[in-house]
Image: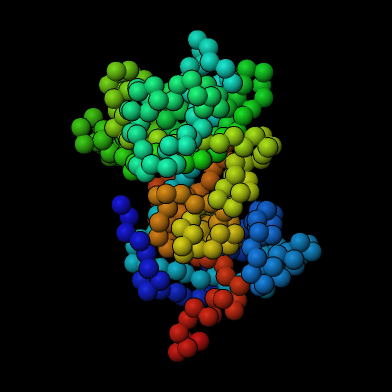
Amino acid sequence: MTAPVYASDLTFQVLEFDQLDGWADDNHVAALKTFLNTCGDMKDPDWIAICKYARSGPEARQFFELFFRPVLIEDGKPALFTGYFEPELDGDRYRSARYQYPVYKMPGEALRNRPWLTRRQILESGVMSGRGLAIAYVDDPVELFFLQIQGSGRIRLPDGSYIRVGYRGSNGHNYRSLGQELVRRGVYQPHQVSADVIKNWVRRNPAAGRELLYHNPSYVFFREVSKVPADQGPLGAMNRSVTGMQSIAVDPSIVRLGSPVWVEKEGETPLRRLMIAQDTGSAIKGAQRADVFFGTGDTAGREAGKLRDPGRMLVLMPIQRAYALLPESAI
């Protein structure tokens, strides 16, 4: 498990905007639009005032430069950017020969007992049967497994409508990586492993593939969130839709949810973009750790699966908050 980060482990450096690589060339209008999705939920007086001004229609770049300062927060660990997306599965509200694999609500005993049953026990014991706990049924157990990893998704029904599901909770067991297990067995080298590689291996090896899925004892339960329109993103940790390539998941113990964050991602396709911290994730821990939301569907999934890059990120903080972090000798 990842060790917790304590405030005493953090260092803070306030920078100027001209020290941000690519700042002048960014689409600040798109960032401001995404910021407005959640700023109304930030109830501190300074954030309330900033949000009120943001709604008045300011010039976007000027707005960010007027009210914020970029702060580099570090904890001694290297930066890591990964990606996530919203899967889209085919399914139905009723079980049939095609749609056999249930997307479950959370049973009461899973809330009361931590940890509860393992993935194998949940799927093989019959404990979930006949209780009306299925939100829907999908046609692919492998895609359902990866839906659980992502924590939210859309289910496309035969009539073309959608059910959207979001994370409700888990059985309390720690997640175990299938990719790492295939590497441990010598099936693949670390650089060869991706979500698509794992899916294809499971499908080519049905019996061994089912056992591989059981290697991860964690099991995720869902809630229906279909009130969110299909043309908007899934709900993030702030209970608002996240936006493709504008929203990121962060460690909320370090980065205030709703904050603008300047991303300088390196790698094969460098990224310089102002994004908004609107989500969290169980694996997103640390001052320089972020998960970029790529959008919905297979294309977004392929792009998200490729991302595992270094760089740096800076949190845009209201000016007084930024300078309050520094020792007096540094001001």
